[in-house]
Image 1 (cartoon, rainbow over the protein chains, first blue to last red):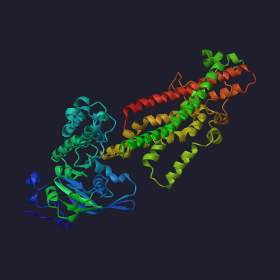
Image 2 (image 1 turned 30 degrees about the vertical axis):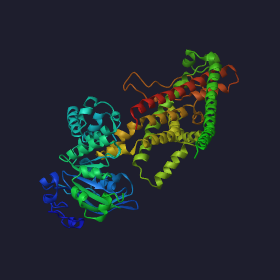
Image 3 (image 1 turned 180 degrees about the vertical axis):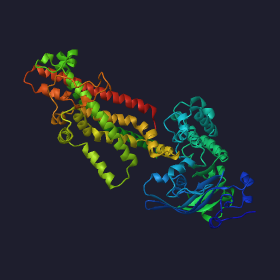
Image 4 (image 1 turned 135 degrees about the vertical axis):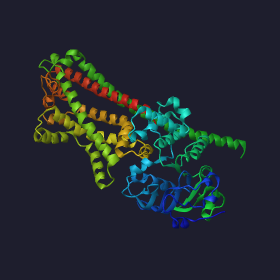
Length: 291
Length: 311
């Protein structure tokens, strides 16, 4: 059974609560492991508009982000996918002239992430981010992983060590890093640095982890490791990943959203988007006609 | 194209490259000459001071007060005064300058008001030092009633080098990559946490360089110190900062009269007795050595900090 649900339908059937969420497609038709159970919704953007001084960067976006799934945002350069991603952890608040409209509802507590009365720091405490270029702090590996926990007031050294190990294991870096925790993170290779950044974000147990083109500065082998890692991560965290590499989106994600010129063109199960897209623009993009 | 034509073309390319490389070599020679001229001037100056003052270099020169007899005159009061004034200058200029720079870089909204402040900070670096002296005379010496004291001198020189410290600190803060700040903000850090855990530690090398550059300028300043009325003949030291009874430290020295090295030099140079010229030269050599030492420390510290951080 194939049910194509357009974005209009999606918004029309907004969930009553997070217990009875609707994802953009009937669960039966979702392939792979996703079909096992109906995912609940972790976040839902509703009529999101974003202005950067005079530029209208995001136009009336509505999308649902399923919990414990990987959602990929794809689209040509400048389509606003990174801009959209950075709305989730209010990164735009650091740039003057940024303006949000609409809402991004965060479940289960139905917090509007971009509400003017919501503290961006509170949002960033709950939503982690991994950046385009590996950006470890010029401190030791241990201090990098422990930083987020220390910000949260954890001072106990053995507890910090325990949590750091857990995070490094989750980021598949423990075996390479366990003997050099007190060495500078800058001595690691690019791929290791990026996994360290993932560990740093995971250490604080975020509810959503945002990836902004995490492999664009890495070689193919390091990229493969990160991709493998991302597919395993969804067991503990909801993932949103921006990528300009369509194969990557196909490999790691459960859902794919295609954006173009600041608009969300289509969102659906990844297998559906890549085999039978609903919109002409999506098809043109994934078959390489532009972008 | 025939083989010979190809060879000719290759020949042409080689000649062209040779011709263009001539300018490369010319510039290297020119640059080397200019650099040598600068270094040689400094070296000759230093050597002249050392040779002129050679007969005065002795332990007594450092431990004696000024005297009417050139052989017995020393720079004890001057170097102690200079050290204490520099201490006050550093303790005032560095915290104030660094905080101002942090505010301007990390906190201040980008509007016309901050632009005006920025332009003025840069302009202040070019204000003649005598103007600071006049300001200090009116404000610190008379208005605040500090008199011609170490505190007044330290505050004056702190004002003088504040723009240097601010500009250097801002430069250092700005060199911390945006991606590092984003990483810290992304983990939920506040602005202050980002500043104290990342921006400041990573820019310490640059901040220290700015501080030493400022102090190197301040240590040789004469005009503003004369303007606020420093003594030129002084035969006692400021009150000791330590005392027997509770609370064991005393800040009386801040309000004591003083002299500094450049004033002592100026005083000796202006004497008719030729013997005092040697004292002036020796004091000049020591002042220069103090400056070079400070710069050396700055270079070493910066090297240590840069080694750890390599973006």
